[in-house]
Length: 331
Image 1 (tube, helix red, strand yellow):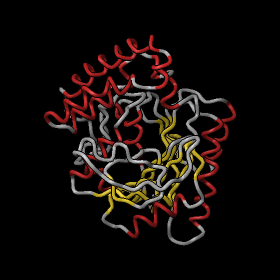
Image 2: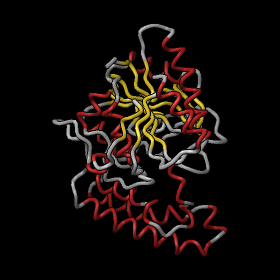
Image 3: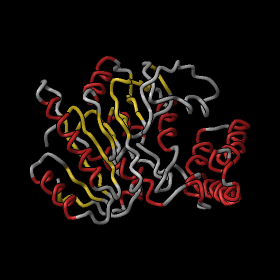
Image 4: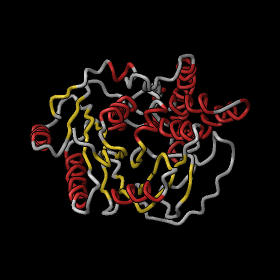
């Protein structure tokens, strides 16, 4: 088993052409990094897609058989379980999580590696994320509020270097051993959306004594592909399902205290319906509020159990990942 400086981990679900475009772009960046010296990279695909299109399957098989890609398959979609799987399977000292629908900037990989070299005290580095229609902009970083609220509104399209207390998991690198010691990501955050799971991870990292560096040089364009991923179940704006809000409620219950937590949970339903869409389509407001109530009740059930983390003593995954019967045939 060959060690790597950087393991690139991509959880994916129901993505086809955009996934292949993402992989091809990253493979080109990896070749450039390999040509610069000792920094070695590996690429892991944590695939939760039941069945790919023939062209996608053929290309992934080709990459896996040539050794350019480690293709690991999970039969049950579970975002935080897939991320923990990648953390355990990674051979690198650093693990870089990326979304499966991105255009990476030329300096993406070197940006993460350089940030970790310059700031060894950083347990995590989060890069710039440009959503559709966004451009890089300077935003002064003024952290305020309690732990629960701090940096929830951080602008990840910013250009200012900063120490922060929030992350986006679609462009996030971690010191692997530190992340394992923390237990990785909490698998209680239910799929398919698992909202706020990365923020809960960030708060837990800072509470454990770690620091998070925002490095805009490590940049991606997020394509926000309209199908696949967390968008496989329709729009959150018109759904009575709790799946879109339960993660946010669970985050507040885990990381908040006292009146701060209560205020967060009371504000949440109001915030969710104060949108342009609901102002123009007010008949959907009661439907959305039903989903918010259901999300709160489900989060209370999740809170009754302990967080579902990696067991550091045995390096085992939580039940969601253990029960997945990981297919290791494409390694």
